[in-house]
Amino acid sequence: MTVEPDVLDELARLRARVPRLTGAFAAGTDGRVLAGDTTDAAAAHLAAFGVDVLEAALRLSDAAGQGLAHEFLVHGEGGYVAAYAAGPSAVLTLLAEPRVNVGRLHLEGRRSGARIGELLGGALERLENS
Amino acid sequence: MFTTETALKEAMTAIDGALGAALVDYSSGMALGTLGGNKELDLNVAAAGNTDVVRAKVRTMEMLGLKSEIEDVLITLNDQYHLIRLLKSRNNSGLFLYLALDKEKANLAMARHQLKRIEAELDI
Image (cartoon, rainbow over all chains, first blue to last red; front, side, top):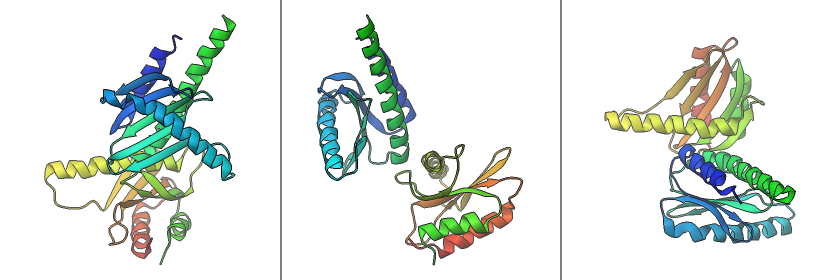
């Protein structure tokens, strides 16, 4: 798929817009990393992990009768991990420092997740039509 | 004593020209409560954005070596005033009250006075 540079662009834009963001990854729900933008190369495997946790969150939300889960936020001693649904087949996982503006992280994370979902959806359509 | 909800309600009813109000935690950028607002004024976006305003000013003062504290921040638009009042009482630190006002209907001096009064009564 030729969509990868577009997704990488979107991740770079997201990193520029949200101060204290230390990593951003997009992964398919199959765990395959589509694109990553981070200062910490060893953190890329977290993207697949993020998919697993969001799927667990989805089951939790569903079991609690709260409908589909769109995102989760984990607050650790050393910072935050957040994940946002990026369309039906991908997940955007973000790493951030403890002093990040969580309000902004959510706003930009949701917007970026939706944008990546559109990019991937468009690529899938082109693939089907070719 | 005001709770978050009653404080925001007081701000919206007692202050002329109030368009929207939010109580915001600027360590996280998240709103503890919002009231008013509309399609053009998303108060959760305002909470996150104005957190950056407050943090930038706090950092600037540190760099300037100023030992003083911020009471409030006023941003004047063509048609609105945006007032940010940092809360100082022992239980409320790390929070600010955000108020958007219609410039035509608002009395700025009175609005600042009322916000100060609401802050004094607020206990979260």
